[in-house]
Length: 69
Image (cartoon, rainbow, N blue to C red; front, side, top):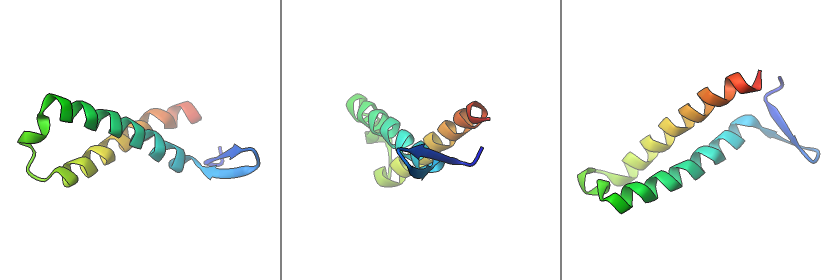
């Protein structure tokens, strides 16, 4: 395992792909949380969104690492 993906001759770090996937999941989760009114309970929405993204990125990486080896 080299830690890179080969996309038509361009080497992209795996972390970049995982970050993109976590961002897309975060967009969906933020939409759901906004629709159900969860953000009324949140004190600082941008800080919460960043924390949500970091937690989702950790989950994506922890799921993807065993699949890569």
